[in-house]
Length: 415
Image (cartoon, rainbow, N blue to C red; front, top):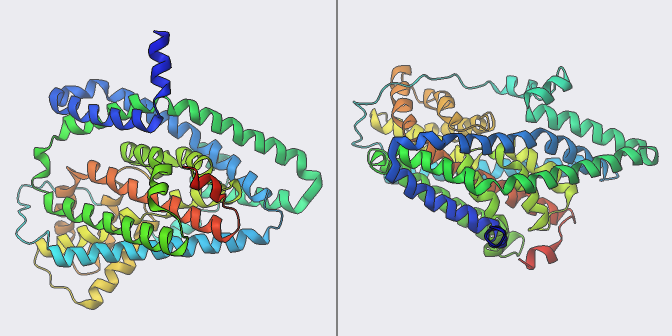
């Protein structure tokens, strides 16, 4: 038994997770709906990851901001971060719209058997912005309101930086808190292969491969679009051209985070892993790591934006709605804003598409049919979208770190 455990831990974690995903697909297809009996293992893994989100965001943001020294650095760093996320989001939804126009996934699609889905109104941007400021910071921590936690932690970090030397004991205590949470994250990740196995088996067992026949055109367009976005925007433009770094080494460094993102379908749930690989594998120092990644996990939704644009035009094509250039521009603008207001939970984007499809006059009943059609297949598509979102978070973190002199290139090159 001891030899088995020693051999197990000698295998790289990403290889164990990848193997678990493959075995999960096989088990799900062979077992079928009965696989739900082990779904609790996946739920347990997600709960363990979610348990770490609040402490890791709270401790790392405060510690990172306090270590900046000059609070003015926070403004320039935050501005770069938000502009980069906005730019990649607009690019992503533009790719989604362009592919929908070229591939025409909605032409000839039969939605007659689709059960209309409940359509939730999109969260107004004003309400989303207002929720960033917590009326009660303790309640925000208890509820896991990540944006409110980031805002409060930023204020605490700036306060510590302003106090200076007298705040050093508190800053050191927070640094220890970061180390403790990172150590616990490492322990939780050892459970990842078992949780990932159960999550993937549940998806394969309950949906099966045949379920994707009806939605194949949309799924193909989504995969092509996101691959183009990751290769051309993240790989060629950012990593190779702007930063002079190897896209292949980047993928090697973030593989654990991408595998967890794919299996959990949540950028927020992947955040502890993202922070761990950004510092340990990519060389992004904590001062950037602790601010860019929590913000990215809540506002950067490139995969979601691309998907919203794609499905919205899919709906227009299904119901024969002719769109002009102004309509496409409005879809891109609205979709980019909607993606920011998307909660970081599985399949949340489905219920926020109403505002985009409403821009070109699709009736509420028609929107409900589109949502109902996509809903049955959305979980595996959401897994892929989340992978793209997390990939974007990590690319932007490297870019901001390198431009701010907080990037240890030796760590990155030694991958």
